[in-house]
Image (cartoon, rainbow, N blue to C red; front, side):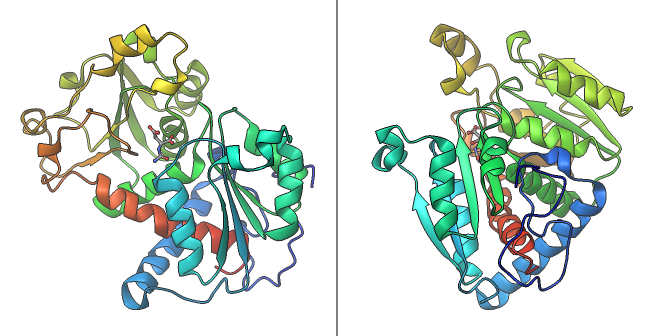
Length: 326
Ligand code: NCD
């Protein structure tokens, strides 16, 4: 299919129940509305119930996922594998592209054309912005982005939103602060655009050099959201319902001295958390490299380990939904 989001791809499966996700690529959170999000949250809840009760199901028995990673990953790749296996499907894992024909110079379209012969759905992480849209154009099966460079990380955005919902019980009327490398952090870009759909007040906390990209800020303001930018987390810590902390993205810096200057800018400590609301959620997409002190882990508001567990339920929900079995 050449048109990414204008219709459903033809997948050789009889849909269990039609949903707006069936046969679709997931390449940007911009394709979702509030109804889609309510649907996927409810399916993720069902998946959690299945895993807690019986561990696995055979919903996707006989189906194959190609997990194609051109960049490092721990959580995203393993949670997609776990998700597919808990749904009874199987996985072609390609995590070191240096051992695949990519190292012989094969293009992304040709690699995708190859994998679609064997798999029913392709998950792709790639260093270039827009790579998953390119892949989707060449692929007759659904392509799910697992992060495209400094662009987006839609499935992380969905699991972050799901975590906010499970931690706080609502998505409207929240004050969300995002801290760290807002410029290069693709998870920030996806979550900000998702929370724009709700009545959210945004605080963006970063050094001047790592501010949120202007187009995202303009989109939030255009949607009527209050947006405040600051470089001091102390200015907002007592007001926020969600504190979303991110690492400075070392691999995106051409000049490592700029990375060194920014990397230790924020450290969330128990002292800082003592100034936060009693009911709030501290999130981090992980990996952390010093932004949250280990002593904060036992704080009941520290939700980052629950957040990564939620990633598996969201990915189970997405795989089932795009394959027409949710
Ligand atoms: C994030 C990513 O890859 O963008 N990690 C993840 O998928 N959980 C965040 C990061 O690498 O900092």
